[in-house]
Length: 234
Image (cartoon, rainbow, N blue to C red; front, side, top):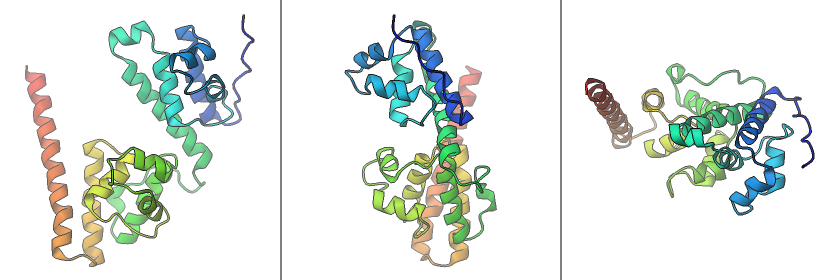
């Protein structure tokens, strides 16, 4: 028999909840950390899996995701519920990162409806980045398509030194900050247009790109709604 695990560190409750989820999954799968690591050819290592479930730190998302997937049960695979488990893990991971990284003055996600200027837009993007758990520029780059979100540009947006150069970059930034549903992205683009119009810094041709991107997003939302209606009627 292997040695017993130390109790979960509950100094930071948000970290402890993530650790509890991981330990519950490990127990349900009936695996040791060593067996888990062997299933993924040693990456992450046994020690990395142990730390992830200790509650003493917030592991990387890659480690959490691999931990969840390697402990998938036959019931989850049969019922196709592993995706829901991954989503739950991401939610708890973001909360843990937020709790350990976010400054005291950010108590909730920013509301794009309150944006009325370019300064507001920049501040809201920075607060969304904080609310997402401070993903690093490198992490955000890897979550985006090649060339969409260069680390150097992302860092300047995070520091408040610049705004996204176009709607594609703005959407990439928001998606890397876990704003991914079309219904959630739409008010951000609408707010960006409002702010940029107030700022008066764009030529009409440049502003039209933002307007067209917003119109395309609205069209995508309508198409998705129509598909859902057809599925319900079938």
